Image 1 (cartoon, one colour):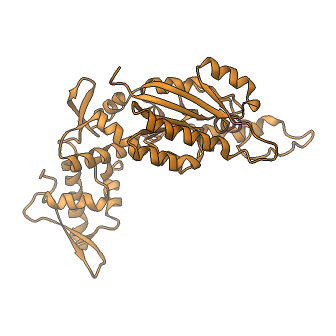
Image 2 (cartoon, rainbow, N blue to C red):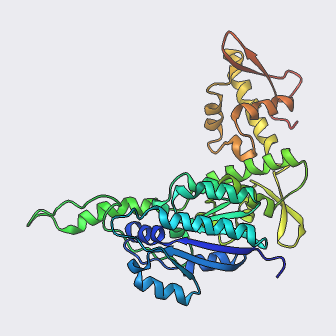
Length: 368
C-alpha cells in the first residue's frame, strides 16, 4: 500500500454536469467512469464536489452514495455564480497540499481554464495533477498544464446519446409538409460519427519513434515502456492508447514492434520492456533509397536540391517517412545519411538550398 499514489478528487460539479448535458446528448453526469479510471492510478482518499446543490438535487443523492463530500456554495439572488465555487475549491486544494504530505496526486474535474494557475502551483509543490473534463467544454489552456488529462466522453463506461443537433446551433424550424426529418438528422449525425473515428495510428507511430529517439539522445541509456508512456503524457496529457484501439500500452508497443517501428527487449521489471529504434531494416534501408534516388536524378541534372527531394523518395516508396525512423525533419535524415557516407550534403548560397550528390567511393544502396 505504501507504493500506491494517494489521490484527492475535486469536482467543479456545475462545469461537469452542464458540459455533459449540453455536449453529450443531454446525458446525466455519472461519477463511476471517473472513479474506475482513478482506481487504476491509485487510492482515492479525498472526494469533494462543489456546487449550489439546490440546482442538483437528484445528483446529490447519487454522489452521497459514492462517498463524495458535498461542499454547498449557495448563490445569493443577483450575485455572480461563476467564481464562488472555484475559489473555495482552489483554497481547499492548496490547504490539503500543505497539510497532507502523503497526497501525491490531485484530480480536478473541470474544463475551466481559471484553474490553470492552481495546477501550476501544485506542480511546483511536486504534486501530480490530473484533469478531467468534457472535451467540447474544456478550455484549450487547461490540458497542457496538467500531467495527464482525461476527456470524460472517452472514459470506459460513458455512453453518449446520439446528438440531434450540433452543439451551440439552434435547429432551424421545419417547413410544413415538406421533407421528412430523417435526412436532416443524417446530415447532422455524419460529421459527429467522423469526429469519433479512431485516431491515425501512423501519426502515433511517428510520435512514438520521435519520443524514443529523443529519450535515447538525452539520457544515453535504455528507454523503458513506463518511461516512454510518462514522456508521451508530458507531450500530450490527453494521450490514451485506447483512442487508437489498443487495450493496453504494452499491446500498442507490440503492434509497433511487429511493424518495425520499435524493438522490444527485456527490461528491468516484468511487464516493463526496453524500447529502442530498430538497428536493422531501419535507417540503412532508407539511406540506400536516398542514395539511389540522388544518383538517378544527378545523372542528368547534376547536384540535387533538398527542396522537392522528399517527393521523389515517396514516388519510389509511397510510405516513406523520416519521422518513423526517429528523425524530426527531412534535413536531419539527410544529414544522418551524409554522416553514414551515403551522400554528400552541402549548403549552396547561390541556390539558397542544400545540394546532394552521391559519394564516388560508395556503391549505391550498400549499407553504411
